[in-house]
Amino acid sequence: MPARSIERLILFVLLLLLARHVWVVAYIHPYLDDFAYAGAGRISGLLERWLHEYQHWNGRWASNILVLRGPLVQGLEHGLLLYRMVPVLLLLLTMMCAWMLVRGLLGQWLGTWRTWIAAAVFLALYLHLMPHAGEGFYWYTGAISYQLPSALLLFHLYGLVQLWRNGPNAVTIALLVLLMAWVAGSTEVHMVLLIIVQALALFFRWRTQGRVGSVWWALLAWALILGLVMLLAPGNAVRGALFPARHDIVQTSIYSLLQTGRFTLSWLLSPALLLLSWLFLGYWSGRRKVAPVASDLGLSPLQALVLPFLLVFITMVPPYWSSGMLGQHRTVNVALFVFLPSWFLALAVWQEQVLALRGWAVASWLGRGKPWVWSALLLCLLLLRQDGKVTRELLDGTLRRYDAQIMTRYDLIRDAVAEGAVELEVPAVVDPPASLGILEPGADPDRHWNRSMAGYFGRDDLRLMVVPAERADTTEATVPE
Image (tube, rainbow, N blue to C red; front, side, top):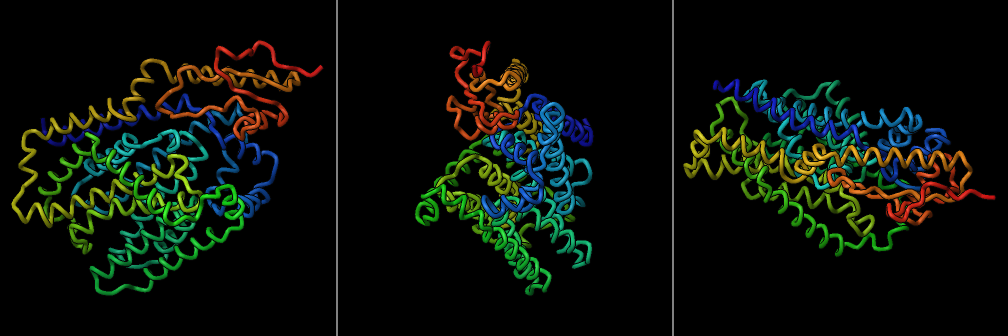
């Protein structure tokens, strides 16, 4: 089969694998803070509530805008469809931003088809290794706050590549300034990463050019200013008071290091990442003269190898420093997002400075076995880790049954509200989908999630309890006499 036909077949299969994650979107439902923010957005003006968040909760001036005006503000009847469209748009945006970055860096060497394959395989691998896909794409509040700026960070890198190659111009600089404002204003993690990215860009410029233009210093200064605006938000102190173990440098360092080792080891032992790393080394060692040289950045093999793990460590620091715990896996998703491109940069440097100098031609190792390696990789992306859960639960109806149970729950709450009930027990989900990694509201009606859901349906005083199905009595809600 001609090489071009094989590449088209690989891209087609990759897109089919990614389509499963779009299929999952048909069964997702609002989660945790979605109800709380939507409820707040329905009863208060945007500017009023936005200022309240900055003064009393956090300094996320960018993501809070979309969180407070999410799809659920339109009501569940109309908002649920819009809610389910957001992950689809984020999947497309992430792939498009990855494609632009790959095209900007390697497009002349790869060509059209391989550029699309690189973008698709990046997104597929990210979804495959993601420790919590629900917190990555399917939970609106988490996705808007964490995945959207991650995708835009790739677009920001593309802008830096254009600035590097073509020099400063008004359009590029204006775009970078706006992108930085949104990325830094989304989460504390992205604010820190943005500063690191700008510092690295300045460092690479100095190593390769011997001098640094004023525009690079200005961008770094802008990143630092944005960081200060977030860090000085009055709401940080209010929120921080809930976490007495915060600001412990020893605990932050130790636990960030342990979590870095835990997750990077899990990713590096993944058959999919190992197979893709082998393929990458093969392609990179056989690249044509027009391909860029990773070593031109001025990194030694040791520095290149340390960089992916250092970025993961830096990503782990903000949550431990501010709260004393890692919390949800949204932060780890971001760590994976920056680990993957830096890992392949390290492989490129090692191929150029170590393997090639020793005469180890990785391209010849693959030889005629390259189609088999691709086949094994695609099978991993179908059957293992997060992808295996998605494949199984789409086929055996787990996701469909979950959707039906949650829709029934909504009906029960609506009926209880209409009847003026003061207390309601609804059954917990039976056989919850592992691919979404959902948590449930509990039996305590005073939990934040329980109160937020009851409030969203119009009854702050409804004592909503989610109990095991065999204990739930949903035929009658408790109604005041």
